[in-house]
Image (cartoon, rainbow, N blue to C red; front, side, top):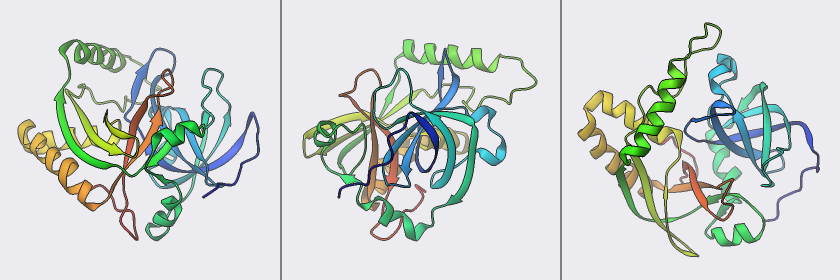
Length: 260
């Protein structure tokens, strides 16, 4: 289905329905930020970055399926057409998409080929994959140590005017990977979804690490795929032909359920 075109501008104010919240990352320039994505009122994908959840007021901390309004400009160092540099301080929530409205909203966005999306100039997509495997892989010690050093530096900052970081005090020791099939062939990728790492930490605290991993393998490798699991995909900013699994969306025939 052909999507309606939004006006071509270099800045403005718009509304979007949030579909993706990737796990927080720590960068040199923007500190602790979250990359989000959704669809605007024209039905077009938008990538929202950087969003500094740490400094947002409680009333502005949006969730998936919230409708948000914000000021934006085109980024200077990101040529992907859907990308918008967001002024986080202008974010406001203006409603929430009802369960009954979610499937109709996303039906026209579902694709089975990432190559076709890339050829069409798109860098965000909602993929219907055939999931072949779900793997939980320990991170290499060097990578884990590097991530932990960044987290320690962030948590050691002393500023009474800035809330505590949203990034957990401990780096997640595992990567959660999917092997999946598209019309273009078999692929594999690490899940970047915020809820996936959060689930590991929550279950690890409740049940212990080993039991948490076993539960993760069942939930993400068996239960969710059977219910209808879709990948919210986005290309890498530095490697535009590389697709990342930015989020997981469960879609049933007539509704979007939570992951749990």
